[in-house]
Image 1 (cartoon, rainbow, N blue to C red):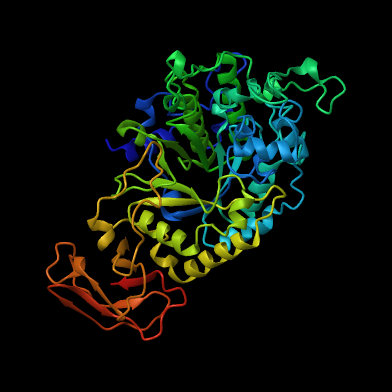
Image 2: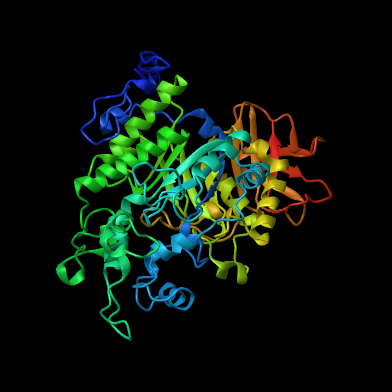
Amino acid sequence: MKRRDLLQQMAAAIPALALSRYAHAADGREPMAAGPFTPDWTSLTAYRTPDWFRNAKFGIWAHWGPQCEPEFGDWYARGMYEEGSEAYKYHLKKYGHPSAFGFKDVINQWQADRWDPDALVGLYKKAGARYFVALANHHDNFDLYDSKHQPEWNSTRIGPKKDLMAGWSKAVRKHGLRFGVSVHAAHAWTWFEVAQGADKNGAFAGVPYDGNLTRADGSGKWWEGRDPQALYAQRHALSKNATQGGVSDEQWHWRGGASIPDPAYADKLYNRTVDLVNSYDPDLVYFDDTVLPLWPASDVGLRLTAHIYNRSIAQKGKLEAVVNGKILDAVQRQCMVMDIERGQSSQIEPLPWQTCTCIGSWHYDRRVYDSKSYKSAQTVVHTLIDIVSKNGNLLLSVPVRGNGSIDEQERVIVEEIGQWMAVNSEGIYDTRPWHIYGEGPSTREAAAPMSGAGFNEGKNKPFTADDIRFTTKDSTVYAFVLGWPADGKVSINAMRSGSEHLKKSISRVELVGRKAPLAFRQTADGLQVTLPADKAALPYAITLKIV
């Protein structure tokens, strides 16, 4: 029996209103939705990626939280505790020493007073995004929603005093997009270990950072009554360092001497995430983890995935949910949608996948603005085309400032992406890979290999007008030419006369965005197409519609 048929049969066995039915849960845990999926890999292989995701192709991500308040880049809440680092030196200058002004105090200062989710999501829809993902928490362990299992440290209680997930989800649904959330909090246990430390040199040598504080230390302070350990989670032994046999590169994966979270931490993570899913009903849940949260040290991620899938079936009558994980083996790839971070595949993948990347730093960094070093719209468009030709989606982060706005350079980039999509998206949306993903110089050179979760973007030669990428829909093939040829002529070798890739003769070639047919002929060397005399407004990527 095919996985699709099996899943349909299982879904039919569950009433559409069965959301109130939950599997038996252990004491203290949020109940797991009942349904066909159980928290094990064998059961989860029945998963099938929903068509909405396969058709959407392009999403935009607000990777926005309190670490954007300093506007000093990604992983600020960790870097500020690393003596001598750029973030540490910036923090000393802007806020003071982390023994007296820690990350909890940065959160308290964050106001997000210019956040307009409706305007931002409207802009992103105009740019061509069909789904939107909001950061629900980061490794800083601060929940950006009304979190009943992180009640002292969430955005409704301190900082903005707003339910950010509620604001984002309302705007997304108003504009008719699919809504996603990203969850990163599993790593707080080890990521915040630096907050247990102290300076080794200077005037503050030996003075502990605030990662050691407890509720009892808050008397008379703004955070009186709150337990910093509910945020920092640092009442545990440190992970092993190199002299103790630790392997730092392996500790992200809960190996190499990493300190393993206790059951209470794992259960709290599970409860927080179930609460998030139940309260805001995301179509997509992105886990910033190797495979799934706490895997393989805990089955939390498996339980969460089963809950998400079962809940989706119960609510919608069929499985409409997407779960993203990273560095997946062949079995795990059948169970969810693989995400590649800041990189992309070198081939047509047999199963749908996603690249996540950013036009700047994951958390807003004013230095990127000052140096005018954002990715260009051209780079984003070329990346999108290449990914879609290989059966993937692009999730693009547009960094949000601490105050909740985006800067004018970012806006220009987003608007230009929208201009290109307004003309060419016919060859993007609802398409599938053709027989080959492309041709040209970029296909003849060995692609830069991925490292870990990805990280191979920008390591290959730039695309040129000799590079072509393909998609298909119905009886049409779309050929994206990644530049306007100097002589105004395009030659497509894969569509030469007698090509094994062509089952029917070519009857018409158009430049998408213009209705007039183009002159073409097929030779033994390729399909030869003559472009119009006047270039496209954005000539760095044009789309030929080949019928």
